[in-house]
Image 1 (cartoon, helix red, strand yellow):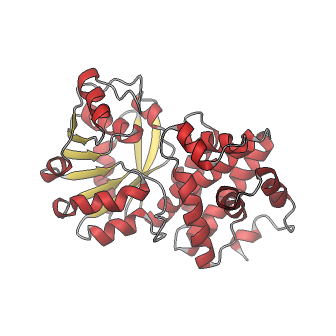
Image 2 (cartoon, helix red, strand yellow):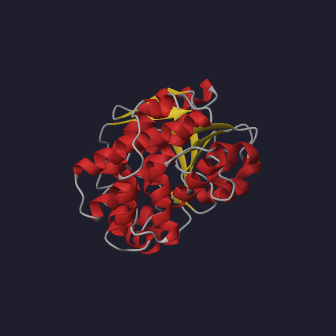
Length: 333
C-alpha cells in the first residue's frame, strides 16, 4: 500500500520504519527541519529514536503531497494537535482509512480522537492503534502485541493485515470507546505511579495504584458505553502495566520528577517529549465531573498538577478515604 505517516516523533518514526520495512510505500511527513535532515542524511532520528537505523526511509516536508495519493493516513501527532492537523489535510482524506497513534482526550471539548476525526473527516474510516508498545522497542523489533480498534470491521482488519509482522502482532477490537479510554487514562495512572516512585514509595504502592486505576478506567469507560472486558485486554491492563513500570514511559518519568519536587512544566521540559498524561488528567477530571463518575486517583492527581496540592498529602488522602467494597464498587454501585 501507499501510506502517509504524519509526525516524526518516536512513535511515528517507529511505525514508519515498520511499514517501510514491510514493503509499503511510505510518505513520511516530518515537520522539523533538523529531524528531517537527521533522517535523510544519517538514516536515524537522533532526537526521538536514537540508535534505530531507518533502513532507507526518507522524510518529506510537504504534508499535502504526502497524503494526496496515499490509501491510508497514519496520524502520529499529539492529541492536542490532532484537530489542527486534520483540518489541514481534510480535503485529501476523503474515503481513506485514518489510523491514529496518539492517546488522550482533547482539552477544550473532552472529545476522544475518533470524535474529532468524525467531525472533520466524516467520510473516512477511523482506526485507533493502541496497546503496550513503546516506540524504542518496536523500532528494535522486540516482540509486541497491539490492538486495532474501529467501528468498521473491514477497516480494523485492513490495518491488522497492513501492520502485522513476525514481531508486531495486531489484534482487532470493535470497542473503539473502550480502547480509546484505556489508552488515554492509563497515562494518568502512570503519572501517579511515577509520582509515587519519586516520593520514595515502593512496589506495594505502585501495584495498588495500577489495580485501582483499572477500576477508574473501567468506570468511566462503561459510563461512556465501553465494554468492561476491553479494560482486561492489551489496551487496558496491558498498556497500563507497561506505562506504569517501563523505563521508556514518558508519563512515568514525568511523574517521578513531579514526586521529587518539580512542577509539571519543569518535568515535561526535562523529559523532552509530549507527556500526554498531564493534559489528559484535566480532561478526564472534567469528564468525570460531567458524567458523575467517582475517580479518586484522577481527582488527587488533578489537584497536584493544577491546584498545587502536595503529592504526599494527596497520597494520605487517597489512603484514608472512606472504606469501600472492592468489586461491588464498580459493578454494583
